[in-house]
Length: 221
Image (tube, rainbow, N blue to C red; front, side):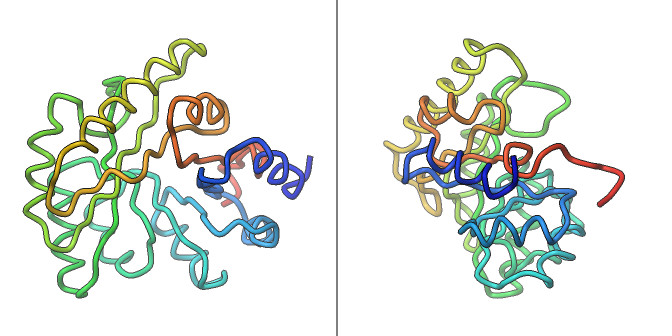
């Protein structure tokens, strides 16, 4: 199916209140333009350099989501350009965001990435370390936490549901508490293979790449 057909199919299958992010990493500007023409305004990129290349070539009303691991030395390049950082995964990165956004007199919006499966191959905060991380977030003035993000381990439907349920439970517990600079508004979970399950378990933001653009070609960025 075409990009246009894929988008129509996905939009028809998800509730209106769920934000669809088109994950466009490795895809050419022409593909993003096709998605834009179908009404997509939220695009997700993994790498800062690729994001910057596309940022200058596409309409300014796009909301860019940085969903890949963000290196601290790249933070200075994204100030004022990224709508939402999904991958806030360490106190050191938090401090770097605070420093650069303060210098630019701007506010960073970010999601705390939870490593719910405790996978060594993935970054993110372990559940038992959340309290310490939240205390650090409360000390910031230029970083606003908007919710949580997770990338779950691959598995069957039951396994997926359990990880999504666990993350949703953390989200709901935090939502009941009052913090400085922290609001649990967004729960970003679910990708091409499992976004429908994620939505059933409470996700209000899904990140779909191959389901929109087809297989990625990592040799042709």
